[in-house]
Amino acid sequence: MSAKELQVINPYTEETAFTLPLMEAKEVNALVERARKAYYLWRSTSVAERIALCNRFVAAFEAMRDNVAMEITAQMGKPLQQAKNEVSGLIDRANYMSSIAEEALADEWLSEKPGFQRYIRHEPLGVVFDIAAWNYPLLIAVNAVVPAVLGGNAVIIKHSSKTPLCAQAFEDAFRKAGAPEGLVQAIIADHTVTEAIIKHPGVDHVAFTGSVQGGREVNRSAADRFIDMGLELGGKDPAYVCADADFRWAVDNCVDGAFYNAGQSCCAVERIYVEQSIYKDFVEAFAAKTREYVLGDPMDTATGIGPLAARSANAFLKAQTTAALSAGGRLVVSPSDFATPGTGWFHAPAVVADAAQDSSLMQEESFGTVVGILPVSGDEEAIRFMNDSAYGLTASIWTADVNRAIRIGEQIETGTFFMNRCDYLDPALPWCGVKDTGRGATLSRYGLLHLTRLKSMHLRTVIPS
Image (cartoon, rainbow, N blue to C red; front, side, top):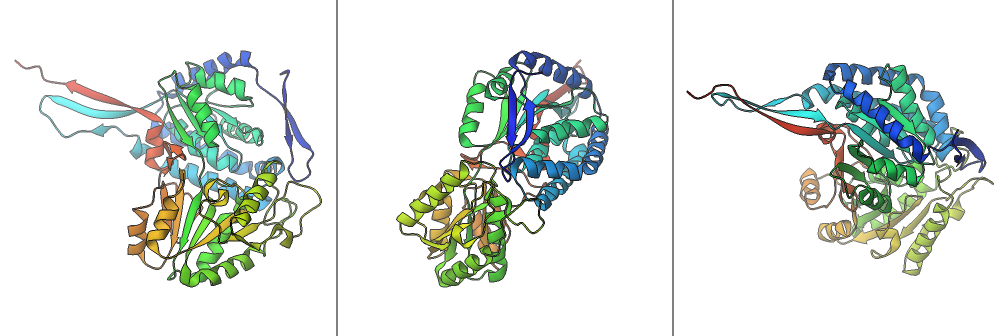
């Protein structure tokens, strides 16, 4: 038993939900050795065998759905139905990645050249260390874990201290699916042990999802090693609502994009720009829709917004709102408009109209139930404001004009550009970002290729006489 323990606090009851042992530094070598032993076995398997294992993993996870969903809700406060939806999302993504693995990982043969055979192989990296965030604990992890296994790698998963049981769910499901011992391992570790694993010569890749500061720490930890990494570090994602948009569709989806999962999403809508001619009507409709939310016990099916996962987030969101109001913003939805439970780390929605572009509310990632709305004169100003950010994960436009969307989308500095939707990952498209959002890609064939290395096979088959 470890001398150190992690206490996980239920953000609704504010009581200890779990007490779990933390891994110790002296255990790191054995952990990595188990992973490497599993990798040496797994790398020689066919892609078809890897797909079969991942299909069995999906079946095992599906059988665990209710228990895993309840654990997510107890750990980070996500409403239970949303937690169950997350299990469905994991299954969809895993199935899609398995469906494309055979073709994506196949050898790439070059055009015929007399006397030679030339092709490109996609070989496994080795041991992948996945450091997953708490806000979508299953979806964030599956983006790396299943593609890594499909690519022939072994995986060590370290989840956030807020959702440590989720990593164990992956290990349990792979074990039930018949994975070799050590192929997928879950750990609970502090920063010191996490850094030791990143620095370990037996680890070949790091996939990290979290804050910009966390990404910098991971980058520094690996600075002396020539290994690749994937960094997904958040966003301040804009929406641009045009006068020709389907008004009700834009309102409803922007509200959902801002406040689903209590706004705790890297790709949540965090700032909204609206064409001047419909601005007043949009703000009124957005405010009315927002006031329909019910805050409460996340186990209750009537609850639309549960508690925040971090106690400290409440003060940060209040400070952002206060600063935006001091800079000339108007509070059109106040947290005082909502009834909140007597316990729990709640922050009811706050909507600020006329939010200054240079305010923290429009520049710094909120990761909670606040959003700013600002009028724009047209496309040129919208593009300038949307690009005025340190982040670039997703952006959305709401319009009936596809050509307009394409023209604007090609000018936006972002990893994903949406038309008439937001806050969504299509596993057929690479999930990636620019600027402080990070580097690398997950999902799609590019996510699979990111977790393999290239080998050029250059074979002379005829010796010149």
